[in-house]
Image (cartoon, rainbow, N blue to C red; front, side):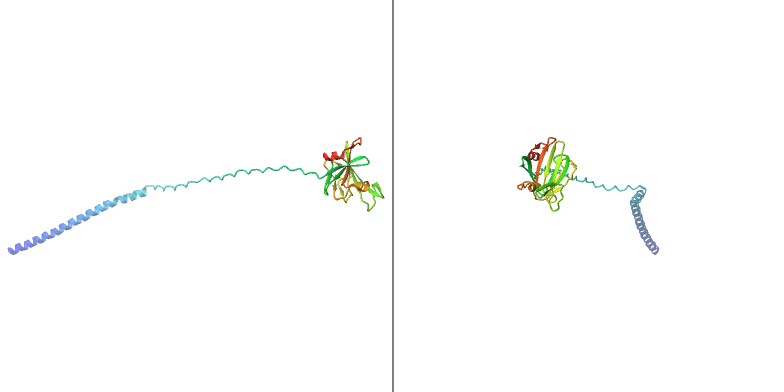
Length: 235
């Protein structure tokens, strides 16, 4: 009996120990399961949110701000240049000089001009050109003696005036620009001084004449002489 009781006690003790181990294992198992449920419950919102993120239309990112366009600084307009006043052209003084000269009681103008000077018509009118030569001390018009200088007389005549120019030797001291019979306007070129020689009157009548040209002026139709110095001085 004692032996049987001891065996039963030992068996009960063994069974109690086994049940304790099983109870402990069950508690541990339940705790582990509960921790897994909590972990699953905690992670489930991420899954839901991920699903919502997929379904929801993605809002495009806002466009980058447009940099402000700076208006170009207007170039300062330079002040207008001050216009330099153009000086009025100065009238070139006429180099022609006129002095009184008389011969045989008649009045003339002794005209002096530099080489290159051009005599022009004081008024409009008809032109007559005559050529003279001094042959054996005699003045001849229209002669053609070779080797003897020709001296031109240029006459300009209008309805109320006549002027006669007596320059130096032709093609030596004088270049005649007009031709016999021409009609010219006032200011037209008549002849040009090309040499230093004196008027034909130096060779014809008066060795003391040194002027380039001897000129006379007359009123028409009367033929009365006019003061030639005053005439050329008032041009």
